[in-house]
Image (cartoon, rainbow, N blue to C red; front, side, top):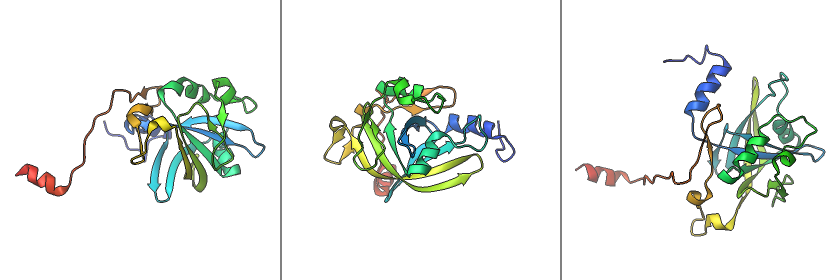
Length: 212
């Protein structure tokens, strides 16, 4: 089938893109409003985009029940100009899913999910203590879209539990961290445990020699 996204609705684009751009990393974002109230919400329209400077991007849509009103995470980031991306692993996946619920503004997703917080090293917004890795971000740029915003954050500090770091790199021991990925908009996820395949890159000269 062929889909013309210039003519299709946003709902059609969402269903197709979330099913094909997969697996996607999940950003469980902690943010704080101007009064210091914390929020936690997962986003899979997320990835790293640049390393110098270190930039991550996340798409944050408007609230579905309130036209033109950005979700709390977006409002908080605009207010405080900072946020923390907590890496979602298998052991906190269920808690992450609770944070995806649209709680009333006065109710805490963190408390409902049973998350606790730990102080960040650079930004004021705390990370989740149960997350094994986190990226502390300051707002770098906002790109306005009709019904959402693309938020670019500069990563100013990275926390990784010692047991998941090979200091020789430093490299993240991803095969032990077991981060999870989002597969589509139907509640499907991908585990990385026992799923790694190593495909080493090679130089052009080696590729050419292998064809001779």
